[in-house]
Amino acid sequence: MQFDTNNKFLNGPFEPWHEETEQFDLEIIGEVPQELNGALFRTGSNPKYKPRHVDRYHWFEGDGMVYAVYLRDGKAAYKNKWVNTDALKVEVEAGEAIYSGFVNGGTIPALPEGAPQMKNVPNTNVGIQGDRLLVFFEGGLPHQMHPESLETHGTYDFNGDVPFTCTAHYKVDPDTGNMLFYSYQGTLVTWYEADSHGQIVDTHAFNVKAPSMFHDFAISENYAIFFVTPALFLGENVAKGNPGLIWDEAATEGGVEIVTMHRKTHEVKVFRVEDAFFPTHFFNAYEEGTKLVIEAPRIERFGTPIEQTNNPLSSHEWFKNAIPWRWEVDFATGTVRDTVTSNIAGEFPMINPKNLGRKHNFGYFVTTRGVAEDTMSDGLAKNDLNRETVTVIEGLDDLTNPSEPIFVPREGSDNEDAGYLLSIWWNRATGKSELCIYDTEDFGRTPLARIPLPGRVPFGFHGSWAGRDEIEQSLKVLADEGKN
Image (tube, rainbow, N blue to C red):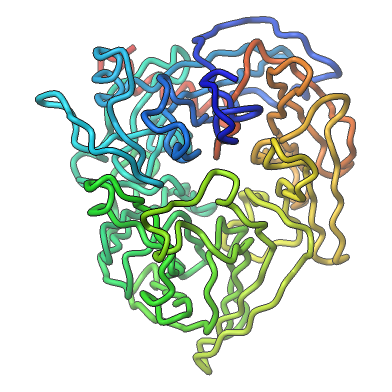
């Protein structure tokens, strides 16, 4: 118990890890597939200093640290480093936490002269995009890091074309390789598309009904899809030391609006669902005739209820179970039909990235069945939509609380289910983490490879796989810019 608190988000698999580590020739139990030649990059929510209010500290607020497992020729190496942001430098200079939390609020910080007014915590997602390893936090611009040394090279603004914020949930168009993403401020949503070198090739801004937290979105072949929900992000609250993430059903008149933007014409349409909920992350979306099909786990509340603004939720009250759901938007009739697709609670959905925006038959996610109070996830699941079956596996020995599974397609195969799932589990006995690699076609509890890591990867949010060619291209760009 590092900070002497019973706050769930500071203990067990969430407990911060403060060592920057590098280790080669890691132990491998089993065998790493030879075609896995590249790196798994992951983020962790990892406060460097004791939070100013440990009782109000929320998982979303931890400082960003990037963890990389490099695989080559059946061998594995590991490295982790802080994302050295301007705000973190201020706290390092002070030797303590300066900024208060933005989710559940706290005291208004007395910032040193010249310090950033808001803390950018790049803890949400990481991946090589636009020839750069970028680490994302939706409250600010992404930070650029060296893909091998993990040195921080400041924020990245896409050649000046993205001025303020950038969502952590970008998508990669499987046809063009372009990066699809957006920013949001209040009720304004700005859409962006960048080519494989980070050049913005399309942008469009539009307004929505409420200042919702647009944590994730979905795309189909022709549309970008956003859900306007009662989960509001109120920056003005944060400035006053109050909770910044508020649940207010009145803001959306007790329902949810599904907003579609045509990716070529930029035409925006709105469809209403008379039910209040929040889609945590999206599996996928695809088009069938006049219908748009959207799949995501949904949760019944996300944020502190507005009537409890002065008494924000504790860490143990925050998350209800998310259940996989499907919405069918009919452009011909303007109606929405929705239904549950599974009764197994889960989060961090994943598909084969080749099927993004197209109909998929398989989905993968972590289960959140509540088997243990100190963990959040407790298994990995594979959803076969054709057979209408869900297969759940748990960790071997003392492994539990798996991270978001990353799908790496098998080389040379057009089979949607042919690939590998990479997930980092917490070892309850050692307090450290292990990377497990599974065969998605032969999905069982025993992984192809189990790689104990030299430290703990605090349970975080998202990550990605980068092949060796992507890493080499990123290194070339850095060398050309004199940053190697």
